[in-house]
Length: 143
Ligand SMILES: Cc1cc2nc3c(=O)[nH]c(=O)nc-3n(C[C@H](O)[C@H](O)[C@H](O)COP(=O)(O)O)c2cc1C
Image (cartoon, rainbow, N blue to C red; front, top):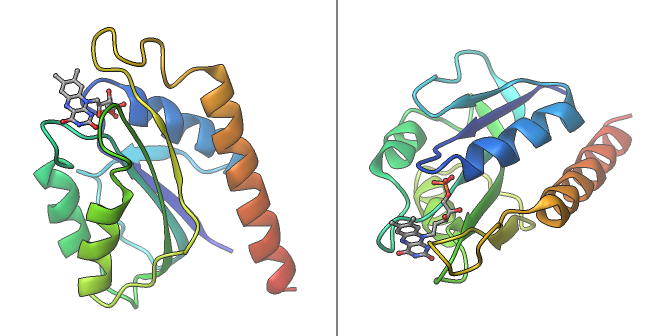
């Protein structure tokens, strides 16, 4: 199985999450400004929220993807007020006909004193467990 990890991170939270994912999966994480050039089985894509929205560069990146290039996307992210950045990214991907895994990962991300310190170690550990489970299931299904 071939994996890729991309993120947009204004305050460093999604980068922290993506780097932890990279350690679990054995693939280095890169910002969304770095295109996916070779086909991958699973793309992990993550972002936070600023003034209610995921950053435009994430949608530009999604516009560069095709179902041939990416077999499945797993979404992750963090935010302080809304429930999750995941639905915004899911909608854009599905509009391009790209398969998005039902499961995703969201945790709190600080906004000043609100949810201060998040994502914290527990959040990152939970993300790593989520990714390990997902990857193990994929590898098992493809044996
Ligand atoms: C100035 C500022 C504005 C923010 N706006 C929102 C927002 O509108 N809605 C929300 O749910 N979270 C908001 N957040 C929380 C961020 O989404 C959270 O910190 C997230 O973890 C950032 O991820 P990133 O560093 O990867 O971009 C805001 C945080 C800051 C500092």
